[in-house]
Length: 172
Image (cartoon, rainbow, N blue to C red; front, side, top):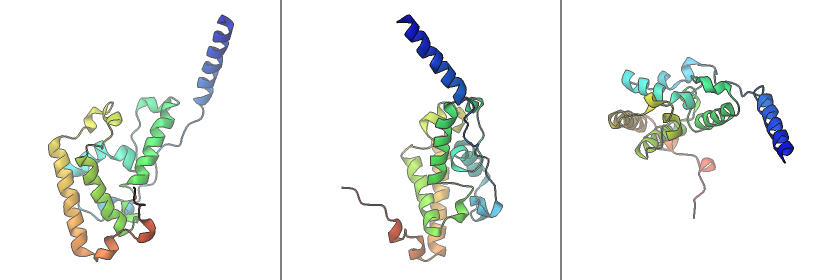
């Protein structure tokens, strides 16, 4: 029995060592100026600062990695969060989105803040500086609302509506 436990522990230790060499690519993508949200939308400095501190690690092409990113399987877990976050909204690629997706992006920002779903609690647990105050959330919501109104005044309504082929299926 002791020999079996010892063998299992050795196998686990070897596996843990081996996986240290299997690393996900770091989120250090290109920062093309015309693709970034700041190229088309005015963002007050205070809002931009809060977005960078609380959102950009998972919602841009530039993540500031903590020391524990070098440890597996933690890096895989973090990489999954980053990839999922960028899939939903990527401030570095915002201007490559069609207008309807940009419009929805601003709505999603407001919705996530109102529901207190962003930034993720698992992120703010370690990144305490990323916790947004009620005033900071309200300022971001007000800014996003102003961007929505600006888009609605500038573009035809049908260009801001999600095309039918991208409609989400209705749930029962």
